[in-house]
Image 1: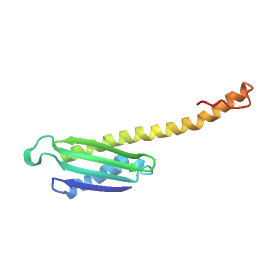
Image 2 (image 1 turned 90 degrees about the vertical axis):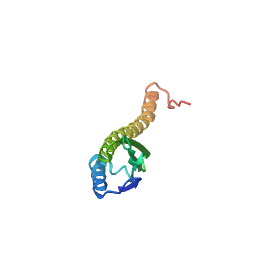
Image 3 (image 1 turned 180 degrees about the vertical axis):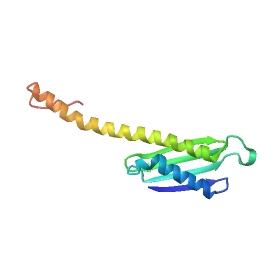
Image 4 (image 1 turned 180 degrees about the horizontal axis):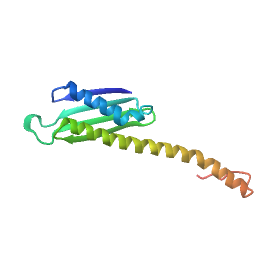
Length: 129
């Protein structure tokens, strides 16, 4: 899994970069097989004005997943990153569960129809348009 961290409108901090990389490994490490890359963009929206202006934009990409983008804002860059990865973990888990459930369902349907048609004495399986 490739991790790309970028900073816009704020000072690039090695401590924040390490924090983000630890969060990626901790929250998304179990999905490593499904993820090709994680791109994180930390941005200071208002500059020196203050307020809820630290934005963490996370883009996850993988062969089975496609692309998933999440955004989280906070007054603190560390808090925005932590919340963004907690949400990314939940969204990725849900997305992969849906994909896996869809595959199981698609595999189960054709055989189920074929067996039910044969039981009724119909030699041809039921086909739905």
